[in-house]
Amino acid sequence: MRALVVVGLLAVVALVFVVVAMVRDTQSKGGLAGGCPEGWPLADVRLREQKDVKINVLNGSDEAGRAGDVADDFRNRKFQVKKVGNAPKGVDGVAVLRYGPKGVGSAHLLRAYFLDNADAQYDAKRTDDTVDVVLGNGFQQLATTTEVNQSLGDLGAPAAPAGSCPMPVEK
Image (tube, rainbow, N blue to C red; front, side, top):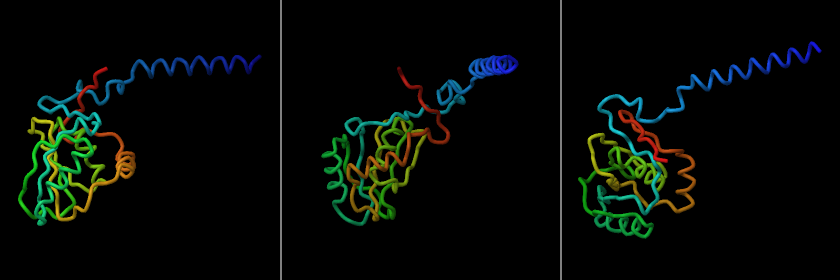
């Protein structure tokens, strides 16, 4: 009988603890713009599909014509290529991704196409949802579909860059 009383008392204490924890939970609105400091931009952290990603492909490498070839490759993968051109030469890495708050989810997807070897450059003042893809001297080719999927798994979910807040998700 004494054991039943102790077990019953422990169950009641556990239930009270759970209810108090749920009532005082401050994480239920975590990541939403409600706690965003004044003036910080809202970053669109939704992972995009290729058909919804707008890009400019720019050649920052020493190899002429590279942007056109890569732009065609992106078009074949259903990306919206808006502009193809040249950037200042001398980009030594694989690529540079330049984007603003509206392009965070798109840039996250593009990072996977470069196997997370692209330098991400976030500009909080940028107002469009287009990502500039600047190809560098280290670029060889875009990742395959399998490599992209594996890279996305390794990257995890898109996150709001420093100095921005994640945009509330519409239900």
